[in-house]
Length: 256
Picture 1: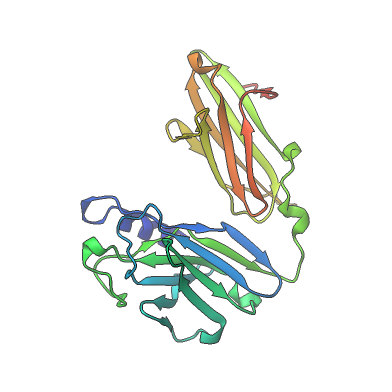
Picture 2 (picture 1 turned 45 degrees about the horizontal axis):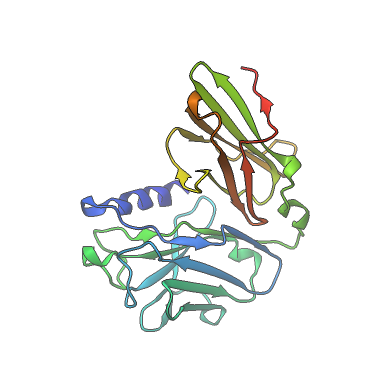
C-alpha cells in the first residue's frame, strides 16, 4: 500500500496546512457472502460540508487504487463495476458517508478508501485528474472467503500482555498482541485521563510466523521513571472489537 500511503501524506499537508483525514469503520470485515457496509466519518474534517463530493476507491494487493464511484447529487459508478451492487449515501444530520456492497464475491477482496478534495484547494470536483491529490480516508479491508475465521476473530487476554523494563531514569512498556486474524489492527496508548499519548512511542509492524496463519504486533511506550505510579493503557481496535490493557497490574520484567 506504499503508493496510497504517499498520496495520503502528500495530501494531508498540501498548501501548507494540515487537512483532516476521514476515519473509516470498521478497520476490516470478513465475509463469505451477503452485503457489507463501510463507513466514512468526517467528524474532524474541516474541509467537509454537505456538498462535498465523496469518492470511493478500491485497492487490491500490490495494485494502484481504482475508483469505484463518486457521490455528488447522485451516485455515479465507474466503468468496470456493476452499478447495482454498490450503494453510496450520506447520513442526514451526520458527517458520514456509507458505501454498501451487495452480494460480495472473492474478487471484491481489497482495501476500500473514501476520498475527497478539500474545498480550500478549489478542487471539490468530480474530476480526478488534477494537480492536487485527494485526501484519502484511513481505509477498510474487505476479506471475502469461503473459510470461516471466527476462531481467529477473538483475541483472548492470554494472547495480549504489557511487559515492563526499567532502565536508569526511564520505564519502557511493551504491549504485545498475538494470535489475531485478520492482520488489520490499530494500536494506541492513552494516559489515565483517556488522552492519547503520541510521544516516545514506537509501533512495530504486524508479523506472522512462517508456519502459522495468526498475526502478532508490538508497540513500545517509554516514560520518565518518575511516572512509574501513573497508569497508561494500550488500546487496540480489531475486527473482534476494542480491547484495553493497563500498565498497572500483572506484567513481566523484560530481560535485556
